[in-house]
Structure formats: C-alpha cells, structure tokens
Amino acid sequence: MSTQTTVLVSGASGFIGRAVTRHLADSGYEVVVALRRARDIPGASRQVDAGDLAAPDPALANAMRGVGAVIHAAGLAHRSGVDPTAMAAANVTAAQRVAEIAASRGVPRLILVSSAAVFGKSRPTIFSEASVEHPDDDYARSKLDGEASVRAALAGTSTRLTIVRPCAVIGPGCAGNIPRLVRLIQSGWPLPFATIDNARSFIAVSDLARLITATIGAASPPDVVIAAHHAAISTPDLVRALVRGLGVKRHLVPVPPRWLEIAAIVGGKGTLWQSFAGSFQADVALASARLGFSAATPIATALETTAHSLR
Image (cartoon, rainbow, N blue to C red; front, side):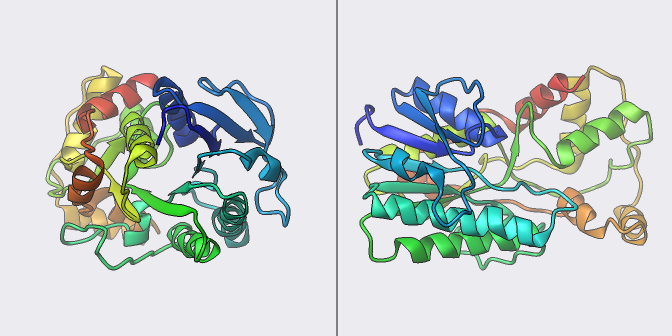
C-alpha cells in the first residue's frame, strides 16, 4: 500500500490514537482524525467530526470516502466503575458502526485495536493468537464482542480486517496498574513484592504504533495479531524500573506471595492481584513472521520513562 494512502484514525485523542497518528504521519501517510471535539493532534492532516460512533448514522460517514485504511482505536478503556451498557456501546456498537461504514465506502483495510485482555488476566503458560480466549471482566468481554461484531459487519465485503490485540500498553500518559504502582512507590509504603516469580508481557505505545502502521503496508497481514515485546518482565523487575524512573531509593521486601494474595482477596482486590502478580506472557512469533515486526523499546526503559513523566 502506498505511503500516500490516506488513513482515518478514530480515537485519535486517546493514549494509543495519538501515538498512532504521529507515527503514521512520520511514515508518510496523510492522517485524518475523527474527534468528538476539536483538539490539537500532532501529525493530523485534518480533523473530522466523529459525533457519537454508536449512533445509527455516525457523523464520520462522509469522511471515509477515498480512505485507504481505517484504524479504529476509539472505545472505553479498562477501568473500574463503568456501566457495562456504556462499555458495550463504546466497544461493540461503535466498532460495528465504523466497520459498516468502512465496508459501504469500500475501504480496503480496517485495523481494529482490541486487547490481549480477551485472553484473561493471567495464564499459566505462554499464549498466542491460537489460544482460546477467556475474557474475565466486562471490559474484556466487550472487546471480544466488539471483534465479533466487526467480523460480522465485514463478512462478504471487500474490506480486509486485522485485529490487533495489545498486551498492557505503557508510556507517558498510560492508565491502569502502572500509575497505581507509581503512587504506591511515592507513598513510602513498603513494597512487599521481592519474591513474586512471574512473567508479564507489555508493549511501549511507540512500538504498538509501529506495529499498527506495519499492518497497513503489509501485503498479507494476519487476521489477528498480538502486540507485545518479545521479552516479558517480572513484577519485581517492573517495580524496580519504576523506582529508577522516579529517581527514589526504595527496596523491595520479601513477603510470601500467598500472604499477599490472601490479603488482596480479603480486601476485594483479587482480580487486581491476578493482573499484577500472575503470569501473562505472549508469543510474538506471528507479528515477526507476518509483519517483520520486533518491538524496539525495552520494557524496563518504557517503564522508567513512564515513571519519570509522573514525578
């Protein structure tokens, strides 16, 4: 696909969407960003009104004329306290509407940014695109349902779909467990994580943007691809990287992980404990083989940069 292709990015004001827009522009693409309100988005050639993507006739319909690829990065992120109905509207209905419009406009490619959360919060063995999905919360279920709705909308059309399932995405501005850990480190409370023995996959947001861009230019992109760094990291090493990024002196204390798990369950944080202390390691062979992609930013470096931005 030509580097002069016009690409429409939904969710361009979000953490991932901004990085994707910048990288597309740096790679020579003309980038149209779909926004609900005007913002300064570095790399955008122009902005269009996205309106309510879950509406029966989204406002961005006309913006897809002549577009070579659509990257759907809009949606509700993984956070607590969100009404499941709102989650379904943002991550399922809106994705379906975007896919329907892309197909009706004959857009050659649609890249759906989903999540590796569809595989669960932790897994005892390394997982790949061929692994059975096991969504275990409303967010993960909405992402998997969103994938199904997009597949159904594009069935029998000329629009080719690639679903990107990123593991936890990190970098300045990220949400989730990393900012929580930074606040814990800054609080001065003990860090009882020295004996946790696990391996979790992450990807720097800049690398995710590279992978998504690679799917546009690939002659034969995969239908589904996991986005992750090839090297996983343990929770103790993750915390140490954050400590370095904050520029503070903190030491990890050895406490039996089972004690911490029981405390988390008693405190109603059992699911959070799984995503923190369980293993969740991805096989990235498909991204390498089909897209020639390898993450460039070491996870420890991305964590240090993230923590430094939160000082």
